[in-house]
Image (cartoon, rainbow over all chains, first blue to last red; front, side):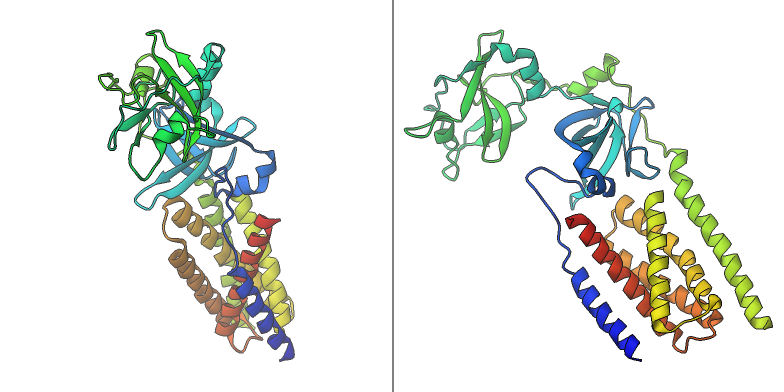
Length: 277
Length: 114
């Protein structure tokens, strides 16, 4: 009886402790994925976006590199963010649905096509960058105007806008003031002679470019054709197809069914033996 | 997934056998019964939980509650049908599952922070 009381006390303490579990978070995104959690010291942070480009027209996200359980599937051309890599596998996280539920899974990096981003642009044109020298003039901007921000000066279109309002001192930060230099660090002059300025970070907006002489991009035409369509047409991305579940993903179901069937038979045999004894 | 299934089953077998011994169950018959009823419920619970919560994005709390309740009911029926020593099979089935679930949560928590 005493042993049962001690056991009950031990369980009460355990249950109380189990409620103390909290989510761990850091500055960089860490996925809720058991393989990542057990191998995070061997994973490398990447933080770049790719288009799905599987040989069959879709990619399958697995629970682990070389895993046997499907986490999700996406048609080719879907933009996916790879946050971590392990050997030649990338860990992708997507937030889906109304509640922005996290979906994380692993995919071979060779089934992804790198989206040209500010890093790619710097790798290609970094030699032409010059230090920022006060070229941005926001004097003509007023509340309600929107400054277009671009992933890089060769982008098909802007990735976001900064809306001028009394609540945010975007203009002051971009222009700089006495004792507080402008957030622009470098410039690039494109083939049309337009000067672009690069910002590493501004109020949560990371790594973007602004057209310095025309920050609201008045009269600038952007492409209405998605970049990915061109890549599919040119054959760089395999045309998308509706995903099909791979056969190996049914393996855990078959194994569990087998274990349950064998156990059930053994339990029935035990029951018969008990009745006969 | 297969690794998760194996670890979960082995850990549950160990914890529930220890609990059964602490509860006073003795003999090969009783301990085999505890092992078999775990082999019957644990892989199904882990697989269904993974499918519902991770793949189908169902809310974890009701799924966990429903699956654990089902496991308790199945194990209670096993204990009632087979045990020669248990006087309160439902109480045993409920507490042994609470014990293994709580230790599992705690180990998971410790694994994350260490």
